[in-house]
Amino acid sequence: MYKARSLVRNSTYYLTAHGTVEMLADDLTTIEIEQSFANGRILERQRDGKSGEFKYRLRGFSKGDELEIDFKFAPDGRLAIITVYSV
Image 1 (cartoon, rainbow, N blue to C red):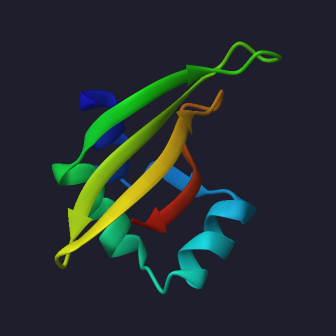
Image 2: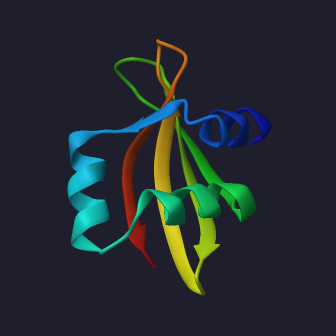
Image 3: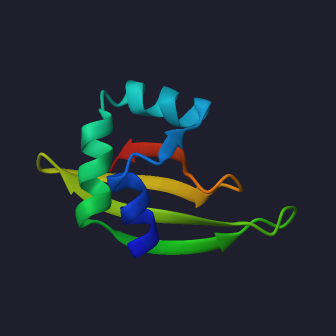
C-alpha cells in the first residue's frame, strides 16, 4: 500500500479510458480518488491469467462517500487506475 500511496501522492498515476468514464459517471474527481488512496485499504489482489500482472481493489472514503478503486502497477512505473466507483 505504501508504494501505491506514494505514486498517487506524487501524481505518478493515470486513469485508463474506462476509469475516466466511470469517474465521470459517478461524478467523482481526482481529488476524491487521491483522498481514497490516502485513507483506504486493499480489499483484494488478483492475478491476470494472461499477463500475470496483479491488480488490486481498494476501498477508501472521500467527503463521507465510500469509493472502490481497481488499479495496477503499470510497466512504466506509474499506477494505472482501471476503474473507480461509489459503493
